[in-house]
Length: 131
Image (cartoon, rainbow, N blue to C red; front, side, top):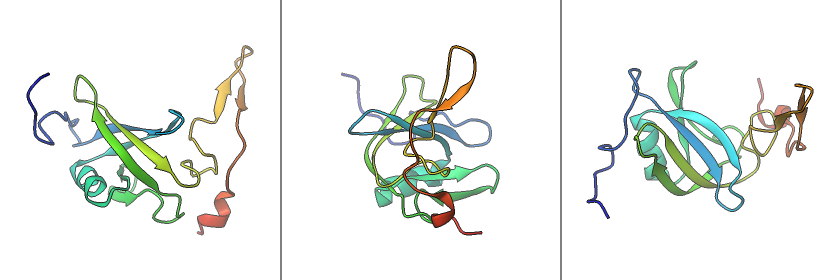
């Protein structure tokens, strides 16, 4: 066992101050999504027990499920061996994907190199994201 390190000693943020975060369903192991986190997003995730991320397009933090109600309750947070990727295991409430699916990874490439939806939506996006 190696000695314990403090919260941000192991995390290697990129030049924009971001680190990729993979979100995985705790019970099934299914990968739900990938998003970017900055230091405040990590701090908010730890403080609230729900996931927060950084939007590169809006240049601001956002709370997963803050608009839709499809929150992610954090079960564990891990960092990879290089410190440049975070893994967050969650209990997903509703769908993780803004397109209505439980996971953002709902399309699979077949042998003919065509994409196919391999799961069904769990909600209608227009019912939770109003313009």
